[in-house]
Length: 392
Ligand SMILES: [Zn+2]
Ligand SMILES: [Zn+2]
Image 1: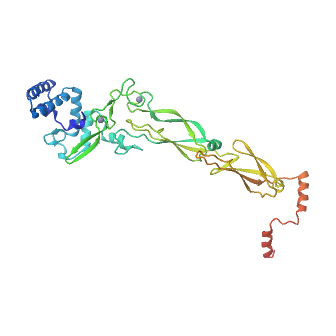
Image 2: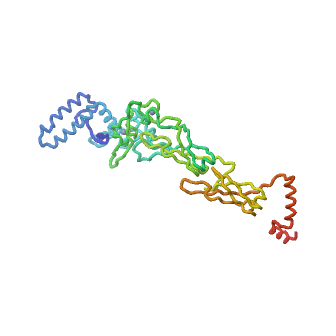
Image 3: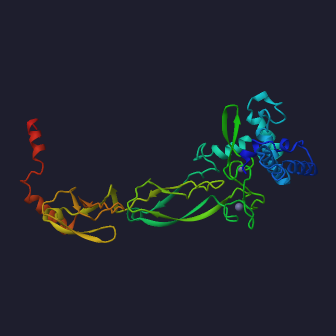
């Protein structure tokens, strides 16, 4: 039977005893009523039958000291189901019908041995990523963010990295259930494991976190010494993170369920890994395209050549036609970044003439001859024309 039903019933009244009756008094009262209303003694009398059942039910709870205490606690918290409907602790002496959470939970704290309202609601609703008011049990774990730094090549090709995290994690001693090893949490009898109890006031019905298990649905009699029953302790974990190929600098990767563990059986948060990519001395990136700048001699561009250009893990021959300008970009198809979604970028080769800081000897003589040979050729006709218009 659930606490919800308990709260609506007055077992003491059913047995005609006071709420501080001794076990003996309860037993005597039950025996008398059971005898009087027994179906064998009252054939066909439905009223007696109903009374007999009610008395048996009341005795079932009140005769068991543990159940009786739970019943008493529940009634103290949520009011007894006496003739006037739901009352308040102390016969309505406090608050005259007003619903005073602080008062109710304050009293519960004193008698039931659990924390105050703030603590309870804090646990239930206050934490980041909480499941909201519909969460019947515990709290979803918080999301955690961490950083990794990887090399350019790892970012492009994907990588599998070990990641050391020091964060709250499922307690290794109790496996997260919060109970001392060898013991188990038991289902909360007050809410039958639902974590919520119903309460009515006038025409309204409320669902409230169960006061006995603080909304967790379970009760731990013997808490785990490592985590004090929380099921969570600070641990250093080593996780394996798979970085997908083609990840960008500053991109976040989500690892579902690897964040802070949930409390009270709720699901864990997520882990976000922010990836920082070390720049590469040779390669760059433009979307899915891999970029590289290749220094060349003027003569190579003028006469044409075949260059050997590195790719990420190999090399490729690139034909440079005679008369290629410096700064021109040659595209090598399919040698860029392959993403997991099947897209494949290109390798973009930028050709850039390098001018030696100093030329001498044979090279200098050859260059002077070359200059002489091209003296009549104007490499910048537009500019020459512009200058001529200005009367230069
Ligand atoms: Zn533990
Ligand atoms: Zn409960």
